Image 1 (cartoon, helix red, strand yellow):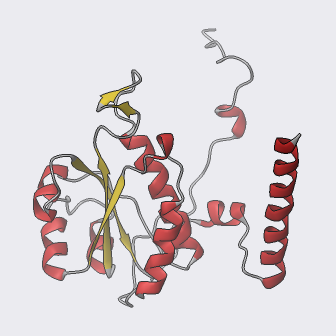
Image 2 (cartoon, helix red, strand yellow; image 1 turned 90 degrees about the vertical axis):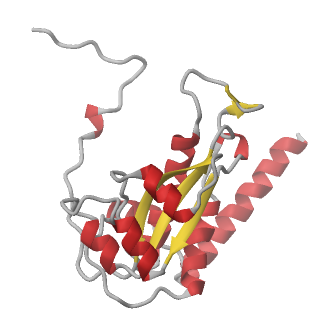
Length: 212
């Protein structure tokens, strides 16, 4: 009974906050943010204020994670020399190479090993370390929050991870997972086609292949 009452009160508080935000004009519809985010590959040189960057990190820190382990670590790179070194680990043919050079900030997402999905340093499932899953959730929160604040991102995963770890002095128990430039867009991103829900959402069981 107490539990049901507590849940009801919590829901009332949550609805009050949502409605209050809407009245104040501070709430951006979630689906609008999800559908509106794009991969941005052209940036203005305008600096990102520290208070805005902190808001983006506030969004990231509320990402879900295995047993609330929060294995993510983030390195903010502004130094042109360090950025140049990191750019050397990315092929110039990579569409995001120029974006990383233009943006005022380069964000490097790392994950602490043997923490997420592990017990006493040993994986609990056949999937091994849950690091990639949880850092993916963190990056999603980061990119969506950035977009809601007028900033652009593009997730970069194809580069020399080991070399970036050396450049940034990442310890052995942590690994670099992905990077993204962060800044104010100079051009809009491209809207990409999405699969129909029926192509990936199934009821009860995975459908059998039609071999006819």
